[in-house]
Length: 556
Image 1 (spheres, rainbow, N blue to C red):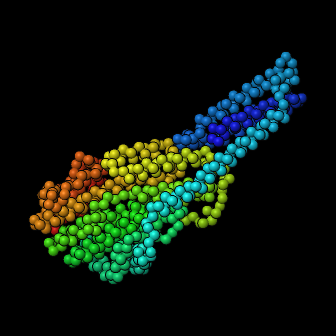
Image 2 (cartoon, rainbow, N blue to C red):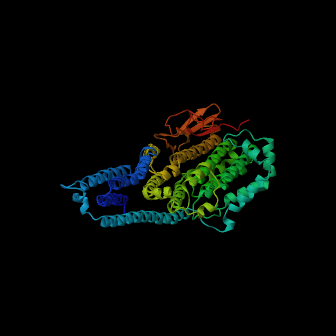
Image 3 (cartoon, helix red, strand yellow):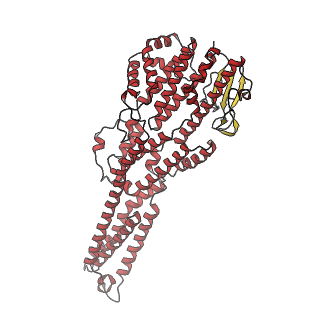
């Protein structure tokens, strides 16, 4: 049974009420009572429909929802107004005599009231049926979300192959050190200042703790113990932040090792950071994937800082399979988007089954509150506002969310060019930001995946420029100087110069400067802004070029 069927039954119920009241009123002998009953028969249906009209008016003209049911509600209201008016007008027209000659005098009030009660029961039954149908579908969403999440989890290996325990142990040791936060602040920027004596002291003090991080990095998986079958806000993992901290610590260690000539140890730490980025992004949640990409960037920046220290004795180290394989593998957020969809489906399930009040959920999302477990035990299935949402808006909202997330997944899994992906993303995001949302929860939960996919392309270009930087370093060692042009690298040191993902008609840019070379992509704006400099963060305004700056020699 559909929403249209519900409104048609409501219309029939209203008309039957007016007819029954009219039939009863014309039999009354007192004029005052007759007028009161006729007035009640006319106004009561209209007043009962006003909440529907008000509700859909708010949805259409305040919330600007695309699916708002206003045309149907106002059509039923106008039809009721016309229908009840005609019943009163035609039913009370005398046929040459008094009230006994009007057409309504031949109508049976008892029969009309009985049919009215039956249609009223059908209306109530329709409400309950629609409510229960949505609730049943919402319950099934929990299973679907669990399958989506568990399908994309890291494999569940024995504890001795899982890095979780080592990361937790290292985290506790570092957090017990009062100098830990200061160390992180000193090494927070991608272009770090020369390592200080305080940093060296910290690293020396934590030699064994650093070994824990290195041991964790080489383990095949990192899977945290939690209930993945019920995706929830609890999965905005606090552990994810420590991955980033661990990468910064190892980055400082790598720079220090390079500064004292321990290039093998420095590159080992770079390899560990790369593996940590894979561990961080293994959780099928978008935030985990983004943290993994951030750590990926730390690894590339540290590698570029180390390359000027590499000499002929270290040339073989640049052929390491782990670093080359990592940089040659395109990053992806596809599985993280699947997990993000599972998270959203579970929220829809909570709404649909009435286990969570909508205002509490909105407050939780906006204020990042710690919601007690008791809230999940409250059943607000009969809450009028939530029931109205469930019946009239939930199916369309869920369909919009599915459509949006499936579009994002299609883009994330696509091998199209950046321009092709942007065309699809623009169509998706124009629909979300048009001022006419497709649904309340869709607008609330749909993450900025377009930005995340753009970030993936940036990291892919960082990988490409890092591979060119490694080839450039090999050229420097062989020819005792950096090449003036990228063409000199092909084919002896590089099979071909990578294409620029952000400009299909162009290759990676290679620009010689006084103290090194800038190797970069033009970035999302498609314009050459000059590339990165020795101390420039790629995130600075007016320069969205993506790449690296390779020094001719180590900084003094």
